[in-house]
Structure formats: C-alpha cells, structure tokens
Length: 579
Image (cartoon, rainbow, N blue to C red; front, top):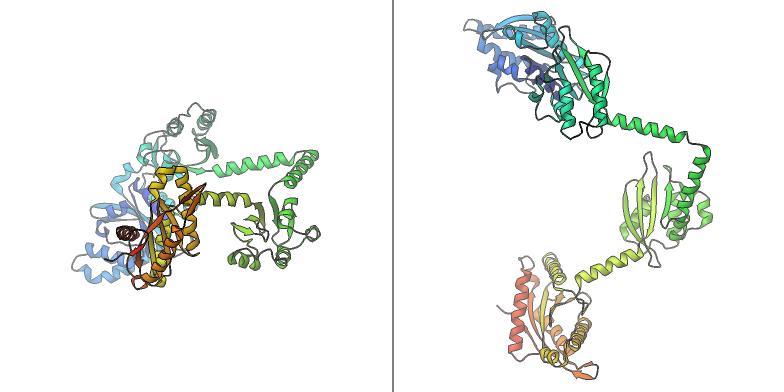
C-alpha cells in the first residue's frame, strides 16, 4: 500500500461527505478498495456487507454488474468489467449514469503516491448538498477536490463548514473534542461565536480576560474568510483558525491546536529575556550555583557523551574517596571505575551491580542502585541520561536511612518482647518453605510449642517477671535452632519453629528434645529461681509430598493438635502428629 496517504484520513473525509449526501470510495495504486462511506452503500446497496478493504476493483465491478445486467448482457460481463476498469483509470472529467432510479454524477480524483478517490452524488439531492455548487459538473469537481491531494495534505485537527449566513453546517470529531461538544450535530445551525462562548462558559470562565480578547478576535475575523487568526481556549489552550471560502459563500474552517507552539514561543521569549540579562547577573548566578554544588550534602558528577567526567563537586570526592589529582586530570568514567575497583570498592556490592559497573558504568538508562562500600557505608547512586549523550550522576549517603528502614521492617516482622518473628512473618516464612519443598523436595517440620507451668509463675510473680521468663525462653529457643530455621512467638506463651531440610520425624524429634532440655533448665529472674517446661507438637511435610498442595494453616492446626497430645501424655515432651 502506498505510504503517502492513510486509511484513517480517507475515512474521516468520507464521514464528512456523508453529511453532504456525497458517496465516496477510495482505491490504492493496485485498484484495491481502501475506504468508503455510508452514502456509497446507500447509493449502491448491492455492496452492503460485501465490500472489503483490499478487495480488487474488478471484484467490486463484477458484483455491481451482476445485479444490473439482464440475461442477454450478462454474457458480456467481462467486457463491461474491463471497460469499467479502463474508465476508472482514465476518467477524470465527471460523467452521468442511471442506477436504481437515481441519476448519479460521478467523478474521479487521483491520490498522492498512487490510487484514486471516486465520488458520486444524486441529481435529486442537489438541494441538500449544502456547500457544493448546484451545477452538476461543478458539484462533482468540488467533491473530487475534497478528495484530492491538496486538501488531503492539509487536513487539520478540526474541520468546520459554514454557510454564507455563518451558521455551521458540519463539524468533524476533532472539532467536537476541541470545543467540548457532546456530538457533531450539536454544532449544526449555531455560529462559531456561540460555540466559542459555550466552550468558555462550560468551565465558568466566560468572564475571563482571555475569553473577552478571543471574542473580539472572532468578531474581527469571522465576517470574511481572510488571513489565519489565533484564539485562546479554556485550560490554557490555543487554536489557529484557517478559513477558505467557496464561490457559493460556503466557508471551510480548519482549527489547529497550537498550544504546544504557544508554549514553545513563551519559553523562547523567556530564554531571550534571560539571554539579555547583564553579564554581572549571569556571573552572580554562576557563583551561587558553584557555591550550592560545593555545599550540597549530595555528590554530583556530570559525564559527557564521550565518557569524560566534566563536572563534580567536593561531596562526590568525599563519598567515593576519590583522588583530587585523578579528578583534576579530567579522567573518563572508565578510569574512575578502574581506580575504585583496584581499591576493592566494589567487592561488597551485589554481582549484578559489579557486572554493570565493569561493563559500561550504566550511563545509557535512568536507574538507581545501592552500592555498599568496604567500610559499610551505603551509597545510593542515581543516573539520569542527558539528551544528546552523557549523564548526570548523583551519589547520596543513605546509610542511616537504610538502617532506619531495616529497623522499621524488623518492628513490622518481629515480636516486640522477644524479638522473634511474629505470627504474620512466620506464616510468610512457612509459605516460602512449602514452596521450597515443592521445588527441591526438601522435607520440613513445623513445631508448635506451649509453655508448661507458665501461668502460675505469671500469677504469682506478676507480668514483669513473666515477660522476662518469656524473653529467656525465646533466647534459648533461638540458641538451639539452626541458622536456617525460623522461630516465632505466636502470642502469649505459644511459640513455633520452622525446621527446614528435615527428612523424617526423627530429625524433628531430636530437635524437639533439645528444645525441651533447654527450656527445662532453671531461669533466674532477680532473686527468683523459676522453672517452666514446654510441650511440643510436630507436623511433618516429607520430601515425597513436595508436589502436593500444602495448607499452612492446616499444618499449624496439626502441630497444635500434636502439642495437646504431648500435654495429655505428661507435659514437657514432644509428639508427632499422625492422621
């Protein structure tokens, strides 16, 4: 398909001609159908639902003549089709023919880059064709002109057609959107002055100075189709109106949104104003800027398109521990990274950060990453690409911020009294462990624990002593558990432990026995020697069940049930859940 025109504008033109009772059908350079309007199907109903984008014109003609020719003429249909194609390609002057009781005027107009547009109008519809001349030849030529390349190349954002009395006959969809109308027919019969007033009144701004200025511009320019003019629109928009009159008094108006152009003009005017500032003022601003950069708490460096570090401030040298002599030599970013790498600066950083720094320094995209220095300082490094090449890089010490974030996360996930995981965090760890069992067939166990003899201690010595006992029990549970296990306080004197990588219940029982032994030892609180025990219930997820769905709440209930069996069996012991 030729690239010099598109189906969308052709269809928009066809929709516009629908309001004038003018049929349109467009073809590409290979005579394949591109677009058609509703009037075309009204004139030629035999094509309703049968014409398709990309359909050859020969197929279109065959269907057309099949419905027109009688039994004698149908034998010569191929000759009619060949003649129709030849006329389609060679006919430039309007011609007339009868079809379904209509006397149709037809004309053809070439498109830029190949292809053509054909238009038809019915003689009895002359009175309804508002802005086309009534004479047959002139009307067809005007319709063809609408489809021609000159107008096609200049289709604006909005289109308005007015009669000689300045009332609007038709507008297109961009016009409707530009002026806040509900639909195109809402504008029919109104003047543009009325449309303009309604657009401003809808936002309650019809008393605005810009509206009054725009109204004056309209009064001066809408009396005749003269030079283009510009009017302000609500919400700080601008529109340029271009008018073109026809011989019968009809006027075509193109409405182009020039808001961005106005903004650029404003920015250009501002730039010119700044450029006219005195040299002393510019020098003063430069001094202020340099002082600001030097006293910022954030390190800043600018890298040119060829990788040279052109600009940096004192804070950047301090945060990165860079050599002033090195930076004074205008090094490339690659040289700076090599200097830091030789000193082991990147060793604590994650592998992906090290790979990015060793590759190209990460100047080609907007990104942020944390780099940990050997002394534990955490630096947030942000890169902002600059149009035309190069980048601006900022370096911020976020050590205290990351530590605070870590404390916040710890508070959210841990029990305040014992510093063990809380119930929500334990359930999250349990979900991850179940997924690990499914992926790697590594067994796991859930140990549900409840203290024995804690209530008498709490009742006799008070909650302060009871809290110290709970904290000591938590400490002992944590000491017995392995590093990869997770210990939590579920509430009150109830605890839980997630044991990873355990193949059978014997491994879980051995861990439980160690926990019982540890908790059973005397606990000294102030001058009191206290003893508590612990009952443990165990629920297993063997490796063989890795592919099965596992309900973590069911696991906890099973472990809880086994714990009550341990209490019933004499307390201070462990039991494994069995179905």
